[in-house]
Image: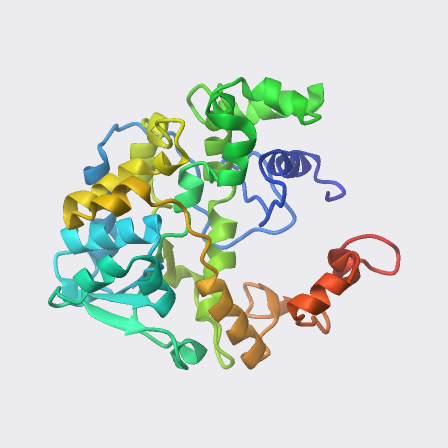
Length: 356
């Protein structure tokens, strides 16, 4: 909790209701709540007006990204979000020579059939980031990732789904928040913040979608991807990092179709509409029916390697180019980390007993 930021602390409370291990600081797109740190390139919230279908949303987004002719580096992990992004470019990009696919052996492991299909497509460049390439990945253009896809679809991890059940997703968010310890003041704050959505936020699923789409897109995009793209001798311009789903066009689709986020009580139907979009292109039926979120750590692993090898331990980059870091930030092996009773307290508690 941050002293002097009571509304922001309410967002942190919501974060804790939705996750047993909440990660990344909320960045409120509505402008109603400010935190201690403002991330670069926060897309403001505007209530969508135009109802469009999925294909139109994907086509519009590809057009937005490719219109100026800048090279597009598509970061493909092999998962649902990144595969649907890649399919969108394969279907709608005006010139595949404008595109590169950035992948690793983990991408192939996660979706081998699609990789074999990729190898048959003329024009698109494939760049394997394994070996030493990740150490200084200097490519021109922008980097487009599927990060922000989870947030646009309520970040519905299986642990939460298993805990509340399909019916629990459709219970009153107020009842759910009260069961988590919310008092009247927090409920009043939530109602004001949820009203900014421009639509009724009624259920737990509604509230979860709204919170992640309005407050978590930006921080997750940068936290997940920036370390991968930094090098020892230069900073990476955040403007070159693009979350495909973090867009007005896709938001215009999902805003009116939140019922498609998970249409049945089978967790495998989460993001089924995206899997169907891919199936229409590639015909991989088993993947379409059974694919669920795969917690691949590939990008995070490569990012940590770069941090370690480059001794690049910046926690914040300021607008003037300076960095703010935690002094002597150590790197732990799993055994070392587990041997500490409270590793977060060990790392971040200051002599006054407070967390900084």
